[in-house]
Image 1: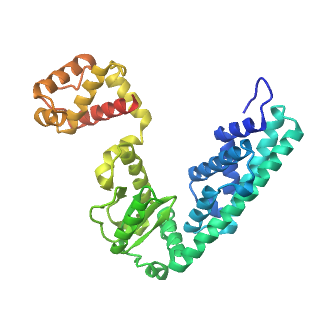
Image 2: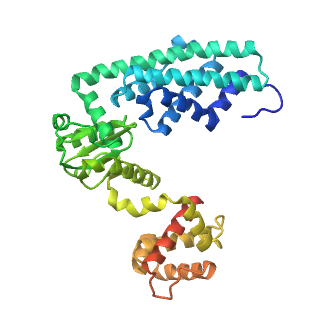
Image 3: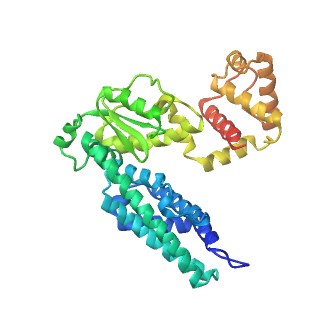
Length: 382
């Protein structure tokens, strides 16, 4: 981070640090390096919490709020979420405090480099220190409140086991521990991942799915589970990804694939229960954005994203590929005459040189994949 011009205020310094990816990474790494329990969490999740807490503290500083009167709902939610993931309050605090210490070092270093007087830095750090103490208290309070609730239901042990199975696999887990929650070492289970873990639909879905047995809980701030049987159609307005039944050894791989497919389905604004295999092609293609950019530049470079007619041509061609290259089905889906579809496909060929088929012909499978991917990424990117 470099500064030019006039000396920034303490608040401006914090704001820039919170938006500096390198600084945020340093704070997150300090937290993960000091606490092995926090280190088990995905790095992106730790970075997100760092930014959330810093920007929240910045707001308190700018409004000159008394920490005693501030609402620390986010901090309590953080503590409760870590309790559900099986992270001890001691391990959580080690990570929080290590991250705070690293953040102070960065503030002092960058503040002095920017020309902020030491007395201004000291006053600002004292204010933030009072806020940080209140945050830590709220984190501990949320963790302990959730722990008390979880202990009564056995959910704490359930969450710890589920997180371990989905992130690390069953190695080191005894048959007795699996049996306690209805799992077998040689069993095959459907990995399930859903969105919106704190919403009412999520709780409704949880009640529906638990009837099938298996293990359900919150992992990385999402509802997740391992189910012995594939659930029926969900009746709640929630996006749910479910993988084919696999041995427990493959649970981490299935979980990672479900997360990738979840991003694809979210981008498409899908809802309800979705099979991982139904989104396999789109998920695999979405993992190669650089290749998609090259492909659409090669095949669709002649299209102008500001030209509505060109967008209409691309939408029609994509619908044609989505409907098996059938003019009648494409026309019905777009509510136009088949001749309109035929005309638009011909105009697209004139502008771009493809899809490379003659009138009434069909694309080969590789050609279909290339054009479908290029059209979809071009439309999404513009």
